[in-house]
Figure 1 (cartoon, rainbow, N blue to C red):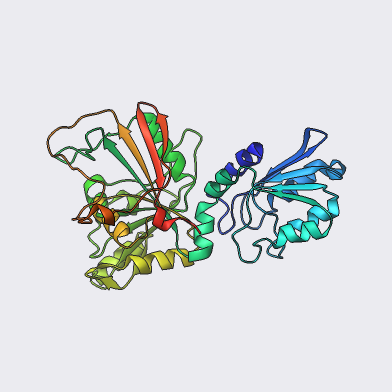
Figure 2 (cartoon, rainbow, N blue to C red; figure 1 turned 180 degrees about the horizontal axis):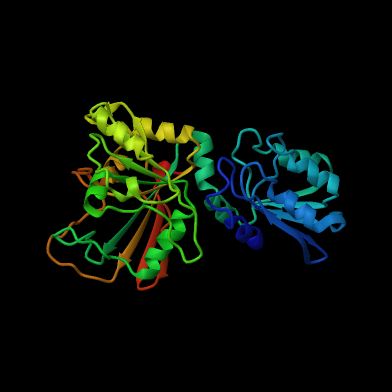
Length: 362
């Protein structure tokens, strides 16, 4: 199953609207076939594994990170393919959260006399498909907020300088994450302060996700790198009817998509933006800044998880403290609790990762 999980990770960020899945076929203690689902419309992981195994699949066991499907989509039901191939046993990590499957695949396999076991490496498999599970149940993106902070809790110096808080290995890790998400989002203040590219820059290349800028009054400069950067990355700018129509036309002429949304207290309605992103098939959204936008995402309970790079540096003074702007809750009893904390060393930094308990996938 660990090998199946490893295979599934090969396609992270590339399978929407489908989940990422890995499969390994074992016969007489030897792997005879393996595969993963590369993208929507392509065969599922089980089919690639069966093709590689050929006749050796008969009487073999298959380890798959997600319950085999039992419905007709772009491809045929994997449960039927496993039955036809003569698979003896199916070890599935978790049940598919898709209501079209949701146990039906396992039931079909059991009805055909195949031994079924569920739950091996379940926690890792749930984590792997968390964006898919959230999106299919709520039709909004699973949202991860990433930030870097010094040991004394500063995002930047008093002058606003933040290059660089984290170490080079941490910044490369962020680009690996960008390669796996469907979209990256920042607020207009981040664009005005940092003029980010919001692209994936890895030694071996990578995939550029959709770039989203939340800009209620359309203050974004036309020479911003997210507007004019020579890149295949697409840019969507979310604004309100307060925006100047000539500016909208100019941004559209530059190749950007401008999405005019209802205003919520003078700002882009984040609940409507999240709804529309979900309708576009955005499963995994990476929120990269800034503090004001992050505070609004938190206030609207749209935040699923947080990744914090903690750097061994001291800024001193007041700096630019706090991951979130605004007042926040007044009582500690009102604070949102985080799920189990994962701690990892990345270069000189500590990477802290946790999910928001109130916004966990069902």
